[in-house]
Image (cartoon, rainbow, N blue to C red; front, side, top):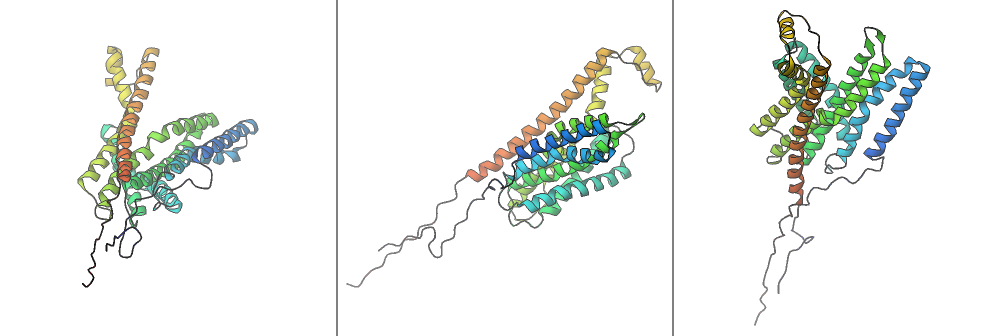
Length: 328
């Protein structure tokens, strides 16, 4: 007689692979984005038509949070079930509030003048505070997977981007000529377009590495891989911030006249030609595109690695064979 231990038999334990969250019952990320864009556009039109300044906070909040919330909703649909909606919300808020507070304090203490090292310093500081926020949110997870790290990292990064964009939009409202609603709207549109390849992308890369390292021991810890990813995203962040300065320098190197260089040496701002303005625009946007492409390629590789691990079939259950010998 033979007896085979199969799934569900007493004494046999199987480990189920992580399951991806099913689509939430609420609106999808696409419907959230479209409906939010309609509401924001309607608010802008009504504000321009009525000059009702009470609507300005609504424009700032809707415009700053629309793209981050839509992308976080998209990421949540690709997470394992251990990542709940409450944890995503917590990561978004912690990443936003604690991130901008920590970055403001540290940058005020250590960074004074904009320069090459200062841009790198901004990247190091802001990516460090986002990493700390992610660590705080994820410190008690029951299981760590690379995919969950990417999703939670994106939530932290997009939270930071949303609150930071609200601050930039508020500052854009005030100009030397007085409050400018047009300047506010232009700032929100530009930052909304660039948001997907900024903070959310960088922290997603770092979060994936952090969770991959944690998966081996079941707890978060620093390692060479985590530090390497941190330095990588900090450099991408620094290049992003320094793109305008680099574009100015390249424009002068390629097209600068002796008179312009002399005025710069004297500490004066030289007049620029229309050709130099066009070249500067091309170079600055080209550097941003290059930075975004590098980040997307890195994240794409990490995501493929994370999802490939989920497709590996679990080992077949052990089969226990026993033979019962009767008397005679």
